Length: 61
Image (cartoon, rainbow, N blue to C red; front, side):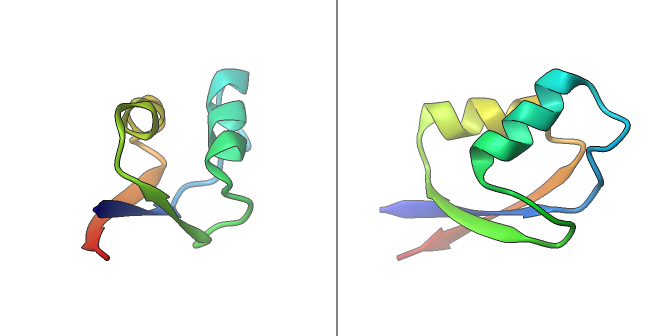
């Protein structure tokens, strides 16, 4: 199954509260912090909301 590696590349300090909560829900805490999630529509939707603050890579595992 495919997985997504999501890395926080921009600080959410001056962003909307919705964006801050989405970043927290993805499990990201600091700049350059990465997490791995399964590729599903829920995660894709969360990434779409904060796409200007994260970098996404597809990985096969």
